[in-house]
Amino acid sequence: MTAQEKSLIYNLLNKSDCLFSGKILSDFEQIDFKDDVEFSNAEQIKSQANTENGTNNPATNSKPYFKQSQDIEQAALIKNIALSIAQCTSCVLCKTRINTVPGIGVASPLVLVIGEGPGADEDKTGEPFVGKAGQLLDKMLAAIQLSRKDNCFITNIVKCRPPANRTPLPEEVQACAHFLKAQIDVLKPKMILALGNTALHNLLNTNAGIKKLHGKFFNYQNIPLLATFHPSALLRDESLKRPSWEDLKIFRSRLLEIVPNYQSSYLNGGST
Ligand code: URA
Image 1 (cartoon, protein in one colour):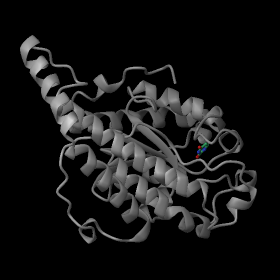
Image 2 (cartoon, protein in one colour):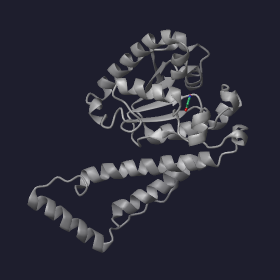
Image 3 (tube, protein in one colour):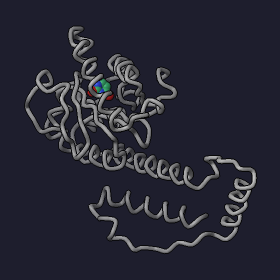
Image 4 (spheres, helix red, strand yellow):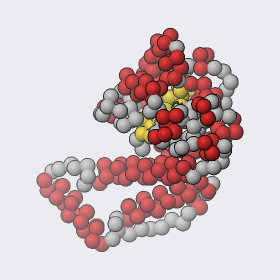
């Protein structure tokens, strides 16, 4: 194992500890890790081979390798948060859930999509937005070259299904809020798309309705956040489809300003 890998695992464990214990990274001892001898020889041989045949293979080139390691680290942290969610009994929703629904997507997303809470299909599968509203959400995202497979992470304000799909109660939202905060800290999305009133109210701490605030940008912990109509609302009221599309175009324009080539990250799109 290389010193870099040892340090990565050590930092990963420490960060994970921080997310749940309130410690900060400087509380942990700094360790000067060393490469294992055999591995550093192998690395030397690989980099020599790359130099000799002029290849720039991401699997063996040290810079992309580090990028990949960061993704692995983020994915492991996200998995760890999901494990904590699975064990959570902080509110009554744990009594009626079949599965917790922590979220799904890529480990370094451009966009974090936040809905309200799981419905029946999501409770059954453990995956967010898989029912009719989810299929519409995938189409809305695809229209602006975003998808859960390529460049988004999708989650909810609460991670367990409220009975009969009622709006989550304030105490349920509060009990769950630290999970969303931890997810945002790890994922570091470039932008946030909030879906519907529950996401809007709880993220921006406002009582103003989505009809008033949709399509406008807000600053959420230094991340541009735009709220639009929840896909379930679009399924109930067709007339919201036009303003929803206008919101998505505004969202796309800002994303293009922040990440001009973001559409190149949309690879599998449409096949979600
Ligand atoms: N509605 C939501 O808000 N979230 C889901 O995951 C599914 C439907």
